[in-house]
Image (cartoon, rainbow, N blue to C red; front, side):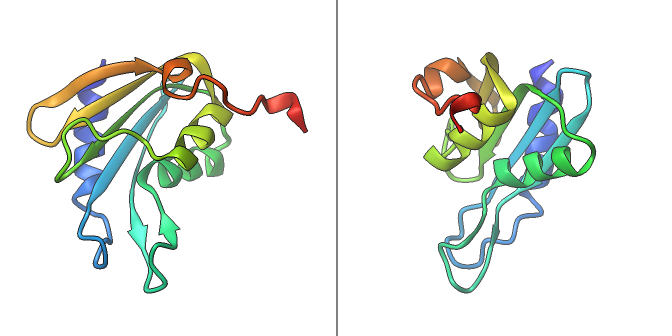
Length: 130
């Protein structure tokens, strides 16, 4: 099932707004009930402010009623097996489970590596910490 997420993430990456970094990124997630949301990175002139692709996909999910992330794919145009940044790891963890699959992709080849959220961010802030 990761192939469809890769294709959605790659399509989203092509819509990014990255005039400052020239580093297009796309992400697509699937909720536990099967809905799919995609996002791209969006930069603004006060770079590095802006939105990561994962953040944009999560925002679409939240605006559509929320849910839990079952799996998520991340792809960058110029980086093989692009991993979510630290902030996005925590954002994903907020809506995921430790066993949520994270697909690290290559823009041409597709999924290169699959990691579990717990391995990607082993000591995430727990949701019940505040």
